[in-house]
Length: 168
Image (tube, rainbow, N blue to C red; front, side):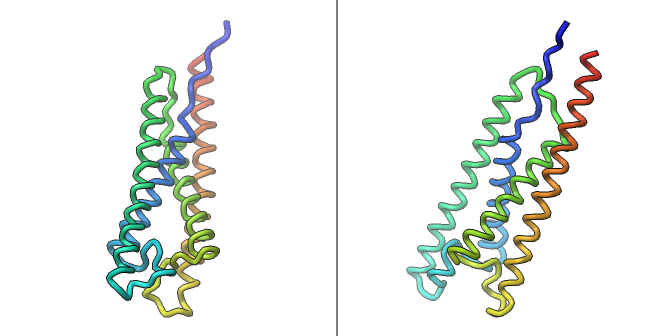
């Protein structure tokens, strides 16, 4: 008799949740609390009311996008969780969130900070030191992505092994 394989934790939901949470952290901590940069402050410095308005509008668009990513992740998770054969794995879930957050940092760090120069991580630091903040942000993202991928893989293997044992 062939046993139906349990449905694993949804990868897309975990990665999207990580992307959204990474964006929330960036927007809330770096844009609002620390005020190190804003979305377009590399192109439009905060030296006029018009530039401040422009930057805060783009910050809002950025935050809205991260909100949509979180909502999409929750929807995907809800869709999958309604199935009775979903095999939950905390390790895989956390790993996928870290992977998504790491991907966010790497894409944001390479495209927005280095290629487009929309802003840098810490624009309050002296000009010569800003690259170190940018590199730290990239290293932080790479570490999260690597750790997250390893955790997700280990969680998936463990869940699969437990599912195989339960099927016997």
